[in-house]
Every structure is written in structure tokens, then in C-alpha cells.
Amino acid sequence: MVELLAPAGDFKSLNAALNSGADAVYLGLSKWNMRSTSKNFSMENIEEAIKIAHDYDSKIYLTTNTILKDEDIEKIAKLLPKLNDYDLDALIISDLGLIDSVNENSLDIHISIQENITNSYTLNILKKLGVKRAILSRELSLSDIKEIAKKSPIETEIFIHGAMCMAISGRCFLSSYFHKKSANCGECLQPCRYDWNFSKLDIDSNENLTNNMHKFDGFEFNEFILEKSVDETYKSHFLSPYDLSMIEHIPELMKSKVDSFKIEGRRRSADYVSIVTETYREAIDNYMSFGKNSYKFNEKWDENLKKVFNRGYDTGFYFNSPFKTSNNNKSKYFKKDIGIVVNYYSKISVAEIKLFDDLVIGDEIIIQGNTTGSFNQILNSMKVNGKPVKIAKKGMNVTIKIDNFVRKNDNIYKLIKKNI
Ligand code: SF4
Image (cartoon, rainbow, N blue to C red; front, side, top):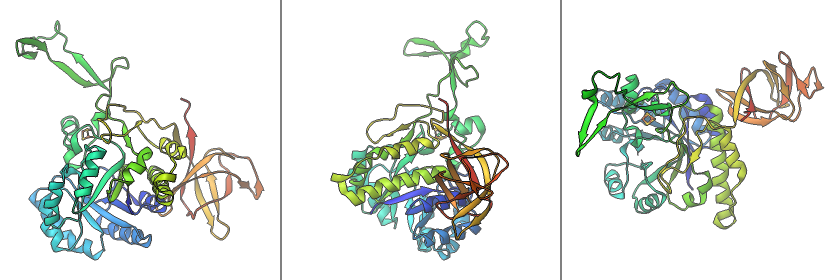
């Protein structure tokens, strides 16, 4: 059975992932991971996160996949006995310098996508080093992946959904150059998503013209400037790829013999984690129940994925090279903060909600909280002062029958379709 592996940057997303059917969740360890600018988990709350996941029979993997210096390796090595005591399921590493210490502490090792593994020969070597799993390079085609997974002596994992980077696995200096924040140390501020202006240097006004002229192979040409665009007319986001989505290709992926399907997005919101995880869960379960002959793609899955943040979807390198670029969120929806749970009556599954905005029967709401995670619900009925109403106004307290268990102080959002 293939594993569905979801991201979490905080407890809301962790619970959202687990409630939505993730078999495993990966988290970042403080500053030593490729999303060091997101909230991440401290050693204190990693223990709690592992307990919560194990209660769901799910696993927790911890990433430490940035560039590490000697002092970083030594500091991480000191944390390993504790992580073993906490019953961590695996450590995701990219620096082979950590392998001895991780093996000494009997923790499972997963090799990060940062290692950019593109062949089975590397997997054979990793097996000898005691590695349990390798995450294959994002730049492989589906046929390459099938070939490698077939020969692999260890487990393999692939990214199936989420943001793509125009540089190979973060090997990029844009963020360092513009913001002094290193992508390879997990601090990328994503300047590749900007709109860029590509303009020729002004020859007449440029006093240092000779310094900007280049000769190559007998040709003489000017230097061009690449700058963040402030002009609406001349701009391009040519460095920003569409996001990856393989939802339409679950049967091909299922036949690949890959062990784990991974969703990108430790910086994404809990509702994003919830919807994307739930959608892939349904598609995978559907394939498992009906098999390749009776499996049917459900248009609803595509619609769901378009509800959350996305830059437009593409299949990355699976079938071709990605060529579509976009810097904008192409989701047709946005979410508005419209209330908070002030009471929850668990025996009758009813929540009392204080409204900051109007609510109408038929609205789709999102309920989110640290322990609740995140889930969506269409509003079929509600009451004000015990009487059924079709519209509830800002400032009112409404009671709503809720599909899942919620908690006091959970946030309520309304999903609103954009006027595009
Ligand atoms: S700036 Fe863009 S391309 Fe470069 S590492 Fe960051 S996300 Fe990737």
C-alpha cells in the first residue's frame, strides 16, 4: 500500500493532515530544514506531535535537510537520543555527514530531495550506508521513476503535488542575492515569484557604456538589466513555474512501485493541507478499492484542488519539461475570517459561533483550530436564539450542527468565490 505523506508547519496543519487521512506527516526541525522561515516544531513540541500522529496510526518524519557545517552536525547529533526516545519514525537528511550518528541512534534515515537522486546506483550505495528510503529528484520523468523504483533496494518517495522551483532542488542564489537569505539554508524568500522587467541599458544616458559592452564570437552586444518590475506594462514572471499536480495521473503513479507520495507545502495553511490531503486520499483509496479497470477520475478532485492556493497546475517533469509560468494565486476562491466558536455542545454536535460577518444558508465554511485541524462544511441549517434562520447577521451568535468535533476558540472562515 502506497503511503500518502503530508506536510505540516504547525499543529493546525498536523491535525488537518491526520484528520484528512495522511499516513505520515513531515515536519521541520527548527532552523535545520528547507522551510526555516515557516513556524516549524521545537524539540518540546515534536514529542507531542509524534504522540498525536501515533494515536492515528500515522508516522512523523523530521526534516534536517539544509547545508550543515560541523557545528550543526554536532548539535543535531546531540538531539538524536531524545528523538529516538520520542519514537520518531524517521529523520530526513540531505547531508551524509549525519548518517553515522543517526545509525548509532537506531533511527530510520530518509535521504532528502536535496540529494537530487536520479539513478538506482546511488540507491545501492545508500542501502549499504543503512538508509531506509530516498526521495527521488523532482526532475525525473515518470518512466525514469518507474525504472529506478523497480530496481531500488530501498524505499522510494516522490513529490506529487505542490510548488515547483525553477532551480534544481533549491540550488539557487536569487534569494541570497536579493535578500541575503539563503535558499540552501531553508530561508528562500522566493524572488523567482516576482514580476520581472527585462530592459536594455539606456545607451545615451549611460556614461559607462564601454563597461557594459560585451564581445563574444565576433558579436558586440549590450548588457540587459533584470529588475523587479514596478511598471504594469513591461513585466514577466518567467522564473515562476506553475504548481505540480498529479491528481489526474493516480493510476500511472500507483503502478510505479514507488512507496510514498509526498505533498509539498509546509508553509501552506491548514485548509490547504486538509483539502489537498483529503483529495489525494480519496483518489488513492478509490484506485485501491476499484482497481485499474474500474477506477474513475472524479472531476470534484480537480475542483477541490483549485479551491486552495495554486499558481495554476502542471505535471512538472513527469511527462515533459514544465514550461508554464505564473506568479499569481489562480484559486477561484478566497477565505474570509467570519467568526469564532464560543461554545461546543459535543452531545448534540452543535457549535455556537460568534459572527464577525454575515452568514447565509448554502455558504461553505472552514473550521480551523490547533487540535481540530481544518475541515470544510456546507451550511445546510443554522439557528439564532433557537429559531431556524436563512441569514445570520454580523454580531449575532448562531448555532450550527457540525460534522466533526470542534473546540472553543476555533476560527470560522467563509469560502468566497472570486469575481474573475
Ligand atoms: S528563489 Fe525560487 S527558484 Fe530560487 S530556490 Fe527559491 S523558490 Fe526556488
